[in-house]
Image (cartoon, rainbow, N blue to C red; front, top):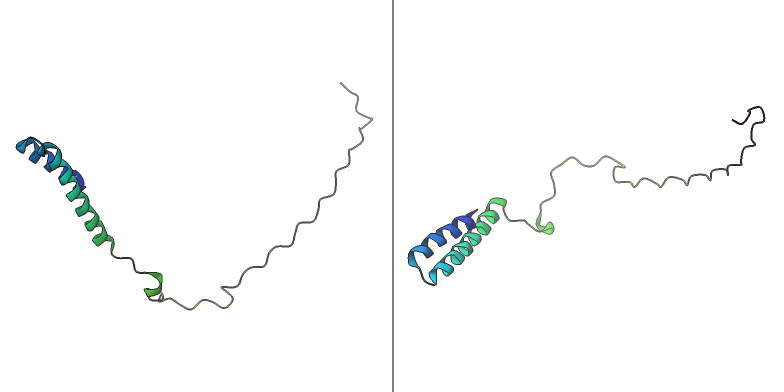
Length: 94
């Protein structure tokens, strides 16, 4: 959001100064606003520490057997092949 503010401030300054500043000032305002946005977001979200430096979580120890891997299910038995059924003789064709 600060990059938009910088862009519009640069447009205003560039309009008042005229000449090449009408191009340079908006670009500089956008760049300064973008850097300010980046710094603000980095400070708001904090620094991410690497996995090796993180302290272990303070939680209850896992239940016995909680980390065990479940065995694979046995394979499904093969289905019997379907045999064609003989036509019923007691039904008359339409």
